[in-house]
Length: 356
Image 1 (cartoon, rainbow, N blue to C red):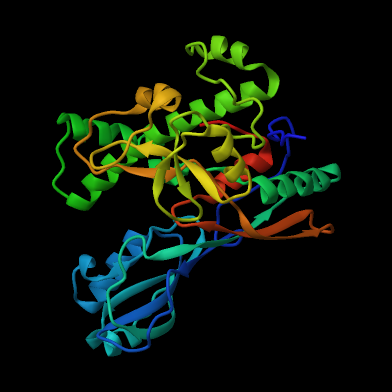
Image 2 (cartoon, one colour):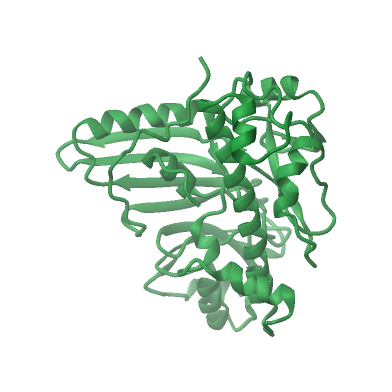
């Protein structure tokens, strides 16, 4: 039996993105050597962004923010644990640091600076509240589906700012109708526009996948306004997310990009978690899909003055643990996601939502 995306299983629960109910911890890409000219600090923060934390530390240490290395940006509205690096000569000065929202948990030496992306993934701990009666069993069922099949890999809301409109400023920067001197902020906002285009593409592919659960290939093509034959052979694929001819795949959880020439073969490999399809982050120096996949991808591809990339469209959720505390109606779960992925994707599937 083919996996049915649990869109109609509406689960009601309360989730507060707060340090009490949301914990994120980085999983380093490699073990730190214990020696070298860089000091690696394990830092816990709450109620502040990574950039705000780095600014506080830089002011205390008397250095520039860019002198501090970090692997990723962590959520403001959570208790987060991440690793940063700084010149080892500042170790004594760091030992005198104290802040109500930041705590240095541990330090060690390493022989190079931590760079953006130098992490394997993140471990999330989440508390869902007001999980009553049958909701617990429904969450168990959907979580089992997620454990077996995975989730779509949208960029999370925090990528787009409090009002969700960072991408608009990024678009204006690209078009030249907005000027901004701060390089990091400028790059972040333009990256938000790239993320927006990726999410719009993924939402379109998800719409196709959902239609193929209910209709035949020809009917889905008519509904989506696609040319006849665009979805040929997709209905019989085992996984919910359908592979189109010309899709660009990657070995999972990392590996090279290659084209899906034999869609049935690649769909079978995807179903065993050996590979996964990718979507386009528009820009230069990256490959584009061909064939039927390009029909969809080209609608969200723009000539941007930024480096592009391929991003997994679908990811696996690993090491899932759960506990139900009946007297409090709390459903506590933890899981691991690859770097660059967002816990909100798991929560959206648990809710029965497919909105962007």
